[in-house]
Image (cartoon, rainbow, N blue to C red):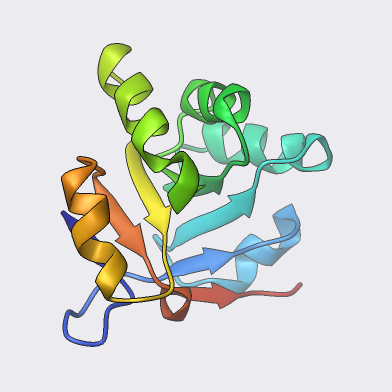
Length: 130
């Protein structure tokens, strides 16, 4: 299981961007992060065309499928959606890893029992503005 932002484990950070110009304010080869939204389709298309590494936060199964089709490396879901998202990802052999957003260390165990690829603590996300 991948742990992003856990206090014991050094991990890569996600750089949350709101527009394409924000990308230039991130380190080279940064792991980008965007919310799935129709207003962000230009960002998703840009990242896909330029083979950038990125994670997409989704709110439902339809958005999960869109994120996979955009070529996301990580698909971030709420803990309540994690089990279903992981099952769909395994059924369709997604390339993306399913990452559950959690707030407490105690949630690691429940996500492990659900077979989720990883967890994300808020500390692993850096907001970047343009």
